[in-house]
Figure 1 (cartoon, rainbow, N blue to C red):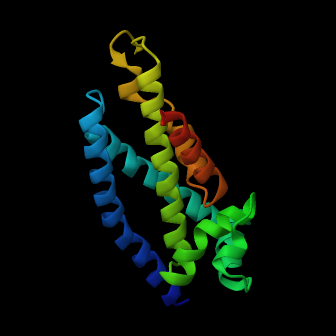
Figure 2: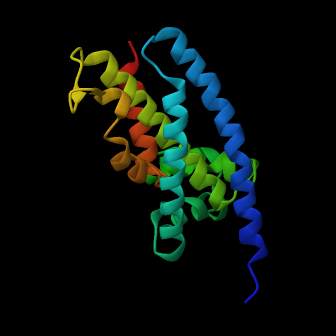
Length: 181
């Protein structure tokens, strides 16, 4: 059985997107670090790759099973609507967000999975900021590990936010809104 060349090409494109997202992260982390002394770019970089690991697990699952992410990818490219035609609430809004990447930049399904996984990760970063800013107590695990340094809750969110589309977008949007003054 020969490998599917298109799949390999699409996976390589997604892998080549990772350094760009890493650079975007560094810029965002630098800006956050300037405003918040407690913010650790090193920790967030580790969590980014941890998150990518779970995104890979979800991609593998979605590849072999039915997934909404396949619909989110196919509709903006085949529906025959213009970009503004998708500007509605609900699932159509995810199509609206996906449209320029699919139709203008030529993103593959794998690249869109990675992009929306990154959006979910950024939601986690802003959730971290929100909780760290608004919870004044210092929570210790086993009397020595800082809860917000250890981040015991990313494994739950990493897999959930790796889903292409609604959940990662909602999670990020909610956390950005919570941080607005």
